[in-house]
Amino acid sequence: MTRCQPAILQPIPPLARYLGYTLLPGADPRAALRALKSAADGEHTLAGLGLSLVSALGRSIDGLRAFPEFSGRGIDVPSTPAALLLWLRGSDRGELLHRHRKFDALLAGAFRCAQVIDAFTYDGRARRDLTGYEDGTENPKGRKAVTAAVSSREGIAGSSFLAIQQWEHDMPRFEAMTQREQDHCVGRRRSDNEELGNAPESAHVKRTAQENFEPEAFVVRRSMPWAEGGRCGLVFAAFGKSFDAYEAQLNRMCGVDDGITDALFRFTRPLTGAYFWCPPVKGGRLDLSAAGL
Image 1 (cartoon, one colour):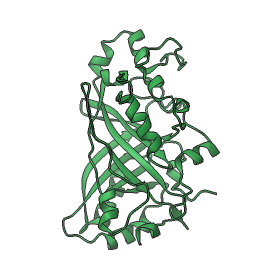
Image 2: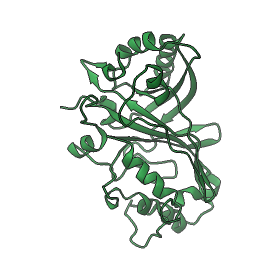
Image 3: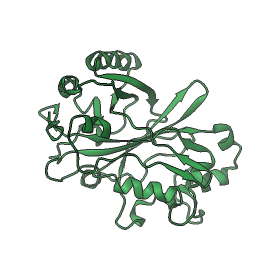
Image 4: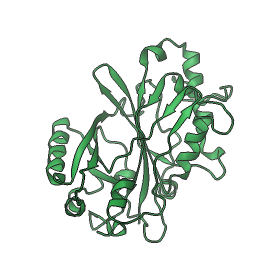
């Protein structure tokens, strides 16, 4: 029986709102976090603590570190840390709005909400990215998902480490490609989601095939599309027992080892990048004992 926050292993919801909070200068976050322990159940509201917040508590979490920034080969992967992340999950946009307002009030005096991203499920049965391709096809399932996403290390058992990025798609650029070019960027046929044996080495599937790393780099993806005005993209979220598997995939996408850049960068770019420690739950409440609370 895992003690991880239930949202990590559950399917993505119909709607979501991602909230990124900064810690106010000179503020003591302890009272707000104690209130958060019972307000965020880990299922309808998942919580993640950033490195700066854990450090402000005078603690350290083994494995929690800063998001790696990368610049080169015509691509930029930014690091945009936050103190606290809340992933509000639901099926009614109004309910998510009011829940957001309650969390703002709960955390007032110590935290300020600096980023809001509204996300949704596109083609709920297939869970597609807005480009029309299925997302998370190779996600591990069952016990394999628990092994990939949840730490069993003493002191933080039940924890998970979340890597999250907001990617913005250049849809006109993508739509100007031929169907073959699009399929070769992803490494799968959009029509039937079959992996292409003749895809180039830059295809995303080949860059990130989790079983091809040493050690294998499995993560549990819980990504969701977003749209605001004429802009759109994907909130990429990967849960792991550590950040190692995610970083191995990101390095290969950026061509760190072989100079081959992931073809996804032809039409999409990350706007943000952050790491969070997602504490376990105990009795339906966040267990922040590893953070001294």
